[in-house]
Amino acid sequence: MKSSRFRRRAGWSLVGFSLLLHLLTVYAYARQPAGLAAFTVMPIWIWGAVGLLFSITAFWFLRASLSLVVTGVWAMTILLGADEARVIANLKKSPPEPGQAGSVDGRPLLRVLTLNCNYFNYGGGDPDIDIRVWDPDIVLLQEVLPHQVKRVADRLYQGRGDYRCHQTNGIVTRWRIEREVRYPHYRDQQVTVKKPDGTMIEVVNLHLESAATDLRLWRAECWKNHEINRAEREKELGTALYVLADTAAGRPSIVGGDFNAPPGDPIQRLLKGGFEDSFIEAGTGWGNTYQRRIPAHRIDQIHATRHFRAIHCSAVTTRRSDHRMVVADLLQLP
Image (cartoon, rainbow, N blue to C red; front, side, top):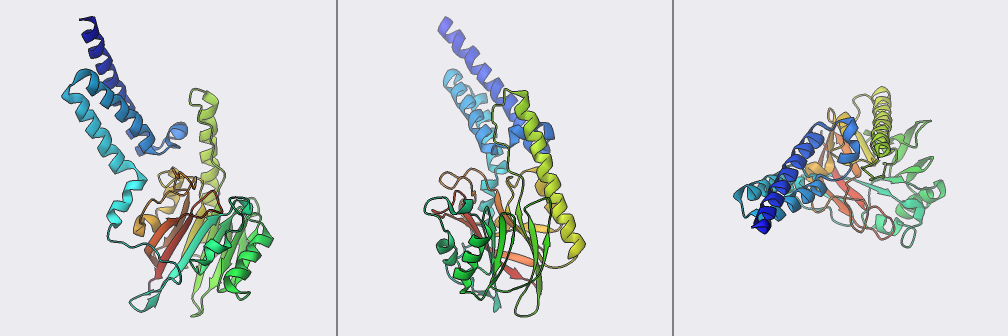
């Protein structure tokens, strides 16, 4: 009798905990309040897994249909809310192939690659071998030194390419760089690339403020640090986009690099007006890029203005960085 009563109380308690966690999760990820930045820094499926554990355990205790309903609600929430699930809409898309990007309807594709290089200190060092496999037209590098950027450019284009460095960022391209805009207070950089047909493209290479990693949610300091950290990243991205609009208004533009924030982060709203996320538009496979071995976050991204349409996009593993590369093939629209 006592055992039965305990099972019922435990079961209903777990159902209640699961429902409360679900309400908090939906509110936090839908509204993204600054005060809950420490909660939403983790993928929604992490909290979904906790909620599912509660509801499934409750079913074991109760054998009640309500716990199954809660389990179904959690499953739908994860499916609809997880960034990883967005590729379901791209089932008919194909990933980029090694080698040249190719063409669509007789028009050449522009291949962009972004990689956080970790200063060539990870798993064998120089990632240029892995980069060369993809024969990109434009390469965005983060956590890289000037001599390393030059080395990638020389090996990739046999001395016929162009490159620019700013602090620990570098942009490499097979074409000519006409202009460079530097951000004195940040490591981000912006260049104007001239294609062989005379078309000018603006390219912004971002490495936003490093993410807060403290997950001791029982400490008030943790919540405050995450709130401040998000605000700093938002300010930095806002500055980069303001400079881009001020120096190259209306020009075809590509913004990519290490955002140190997942696609659901509020800072991404700054890009919503004029940019498309290449992975959401054409991504295939597991798009998360950090940490390389078990990637839980898609913090490395490529966005482009509506002068382009993403045709292929994938995250590609390299043994020479703690991040995965992102490779995107873009079609420039007439």
